[in-house]
Amino acid sequence: GSCSLITCWQQLAPFREVGDWLKEKYDGATEVRINRRGKLQVKHPQFNVPTAEDLVYMASSPDYCKRNNTVGSLGTTSRICNKTSPGMDGCGLLCCGRGYNSQKITVRERCHCK
Image (tube, rainbow, N blue to C red; front, side, top):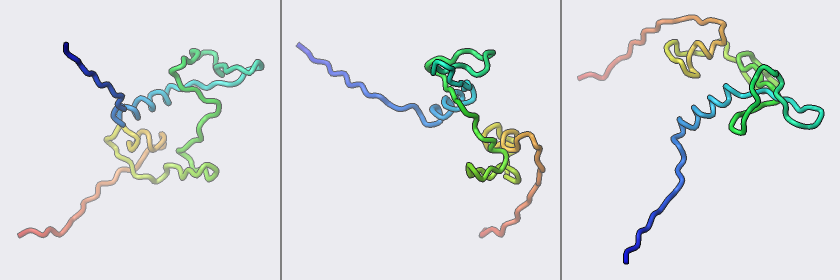
């Protein structure tokens, strides 16, 4: 006779995939409240009832665009942003709709050429 051995193991998805998935869930989270019977209920009835795969929240996050000493947020005023980035460092997101000033900076450095 012959024997065959199969080894299986679980592996985490790449960090970027996990982060993207969580961000998508966070952006689509549903606000809920506890009703008189002690059950979770969608706060705004125009939204769908969340599934077991969805994220829910009971209190809104603070506005991180504005300085808030209570939560330790410095706000985003005067932060440097990347005009061409669609990500978290992009001006569209980081400047919170306030607009931004563009600067063109030329840096001259002395090279150690031979």
